[in-house]
Length: 175
Image (cartoon, rainbow, N blue to C red; front, side, top):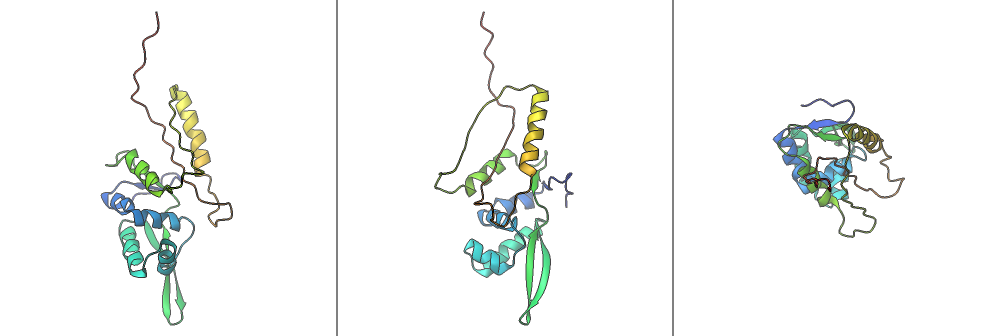
């Protein structure tokens, strides 16, 4: 399994990881597990699944190295298992077979049909290399500050930020 990169999260690179995260149910399951460890029953209830289906998807996530058994407890003669993410966050490896389109697709799949409260913008900036580094550092601080996951601060919103070199030709200087 890949190591965590300076607190930024598990670095995703293997085809198994992308296949696991590419399924909409497993993508939603990962987002539920960002809140706290949960049992199969809790996951099934949160996602509107039967327990067996939730178990199958947890197994796929475990085999991909994204989810682990966090705790077991004895309950009424049985064992209750709690599953957790192996890392607080995931990051794409620079050489991964998939690229930003994977993240864009993931963000689109979790957007609610009702777009109220959604701010989606596309802007182009002309920046120097130093400005790119400074902006990247500022965004990373903002995006990695861990919010409370207990629902005490309102509803969940996604944040997809991509600073990329755009294929926009420059006009020649006017004479």
